[in-house]
Length: 77
Image (cartoon, rainbow, N blue to C red):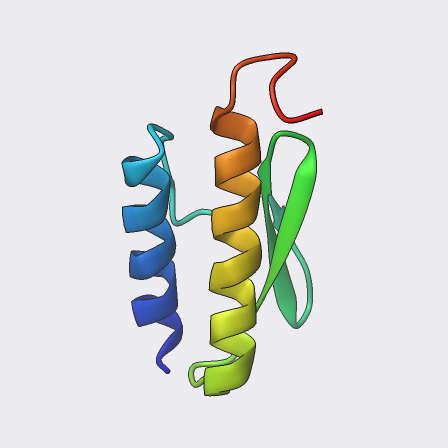
């Protein structure tokens, strides 16, 4: 999967849960970038092509983090 496609999917998921998404990462690394939601980070490789299994794992983690951050306080404990 192309990195831009992964970032676009992350942006759509963020919008679905009511969050703003900027394609500028919160933390830049040499080979990876970090995006934060609710104090947790998802790490995205900086490669042009990202392995399909890795991309699915990133999206799954991202969606779980967004879901948790979107819940009202005290819910889900």
